[in-house]
Length: 345
Ligand code: PHE
Image (cartoon, rainbow, N blue to C red; front, side, top):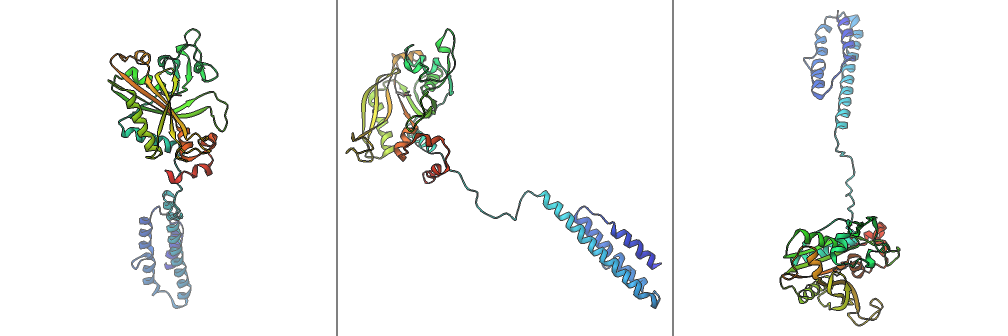
C-alpha cells in the first residue's frame, strides 16, 4: 500500500508545473511542509515490516529529493521568464551617456538672437524654398539684377512668362521680412535667422550654403541714428565693450542709404595686424534704411513709416569669434572640430 502511494507520488511530482511564484509556494506546502504529503507518509512508515524499512526509507528519500529538485527547477524557470519581461538591466555599468555639444554656428546664432531679443526684437522665419516675388521683386531688385542670375541663385522652377513666379532656394533671409511685412503692420521689430544658398564654388572661404541673421525695424520716425546705436550695442555685446564700429557707404537694392559695417579689430585693438590685414578694421555686416519702394511693395505706407534693416553671416561672426580658418569645417561633421566647442556651450 505504502509503496504504491510512493510510486504514484513520484509520478505526480515529476510532472508538476507552475506559472508563478504563488503556485510554486502552493506546491511546496502541499508536498514538503510539515503537514505535507511526504511527511504524512512517515505515519505509515512506522507500520512497515522491519526487513522492508530500509527499502521503503530509500524510496521516501528519493521522493523528497525529487520534490525539492522539481520545485527549485520551477522557481528558476519562472524567475528567468520574469526577468526577461523587465526592460531595466540592473547589471549594466553606470557609465554616463556621453552628451553631444552644440554646433558652433548654433552657439553663435543663439548669442546673436539673444542680444537682439534684449533690445526688443522677436523672431520671424520663412521658407528656404521661396519665390522670386519675395526674395527679389518686393525687395526692389531690378529685373536684370545679377543676384537673379543663374550664377548666384539656385533656381528650382523657372516660369515661362513671369519671373516673379520663379521658385528658388533663398539667397538671403530678407525674403522672410517681405513675408512678414505683407502680413503685419508697423511697429515691426524682427530678426530672421536661417540658412541661405548661393551658387558658389566650395572653398575655404566660400560655400554653396551659409547662415544669416537679418533684422528689420519699422515704425514712425525711425532714423539712421537708431540703426547705428543698435548696431554699436550689438558689436559691444558680441565682441567686447571696447569695440568701435565704422560705417562705409555701400549699395543694396532694398536699402537707401546703405552701408557696410566694420568693427575695430579685437585682436590688435585697431592697431593693425595680420588678421585685419593691417587696416585695424574687420567687416561684419550690411545695413541701411529700408527703401520706400520695399515698404510700398509690401503694403506699408512709406509716407508714414520709415525703417532700417541689417544682415550678417553667422559663419563670418563665428570665424571672427573663434578664428575658424576654413568654412568647410562647419559642415564636415568632424567630431574633433565640434568637440572643440564643448566649453562654449
Ligand atoms: N540681404 C543682404 C545680403 O544677403 C544683407 C543686408 C540685409 C543688407 C539688410 C542690408 C540690409 O547680403
